[in-house]
Image 1: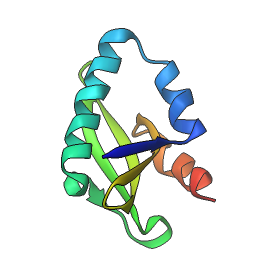
Image 2 (image 1 turned 60 degrees about the vertical axis):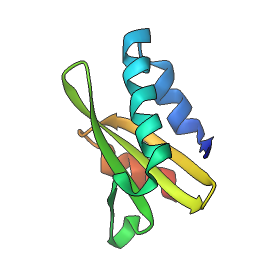
Image 3 (image 1 turned 90 degrees about the vertical axis):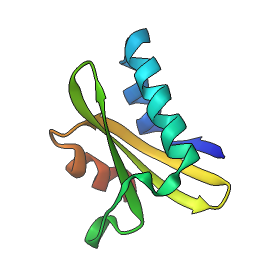
Image 4 (image 1 turned 45 degrees about the vertical axis):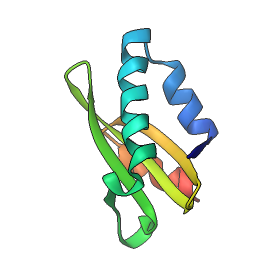
Length: 92
């Protein structure tokens, strides 16, 4: 599975510490092995899936889009606060 990243995803990952990046890597392995692991969104965010996981005992959300059988586009990463508002901006 090929993972394509957006600039907003890169900005979010740069703020993480090494132990947090390891937890993110584990979540990315789960999503790349099973692309339908995340919850499918509807309405304005149709086609986007969001996978919830823990980083340092805090829930984080990973938004991605399945492009085809071999490619996933990682849209953004963050805590729940203002996540969907920011995700709509990435999608525009």
